[in-house]
Image 1 (cartoon, rainbow, N blue to C red):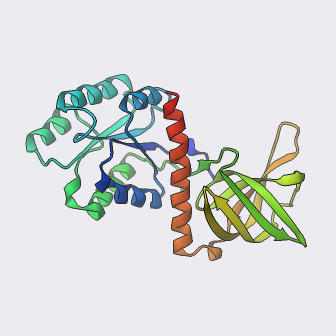
Image 2: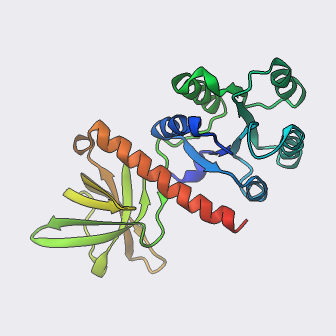
Image 3: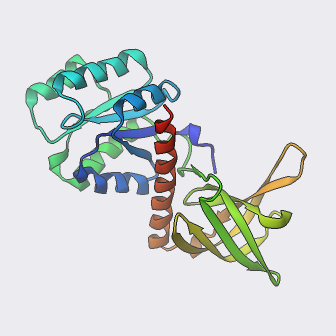
Length: 254
């Protein structure tokens, strides 16, 4: 699993309910997406994450003058930020002002064209702005207590805590200092993450050592044959929810 900094965080500011389906689809397409209604906290947070993309909903949160000032402030204060707007208001003058005068590089998206079409437009915009970076899968860092797994291996029941998760694999700490060799096949791993349960299989592909040189984590790649489409989508949804919870905590401190 590649480091998350290789991609861009994509924020939807004051997302309307009609955007829920679109954001779910973007998460399934392996974009690192977040929802927030905290424009001031987000602005402060972006000082530490300048290589991000923000889509502001012009229909909520601030009035027209407030949004103009906010977006202009983003463009001036954090030049690396990619900015786009979303709205239900198909106003040609507004459209021209944001695209021609403010030059928002991530577009002016009219939401009433439908979820599927909106998802396609946003996908093309995000791809044009290299939102995925070099990574293929969005990674979620799992704080203690986020997720656990259990499996039977050579007559023993092994339990572990998740430290990282993506739809392609995970990093885990085994209880009791258990160490498995690279190449070990793990079958019927029972995952419990944020109350969601999932059964997968995988193989140990690497070990991460701590400063003392001992293995502190095992990197496990999931066996594609153990993941049907429903399980893949469930994993991607879980990754989105874990990241969203982590972002809400970060924004609360911004």
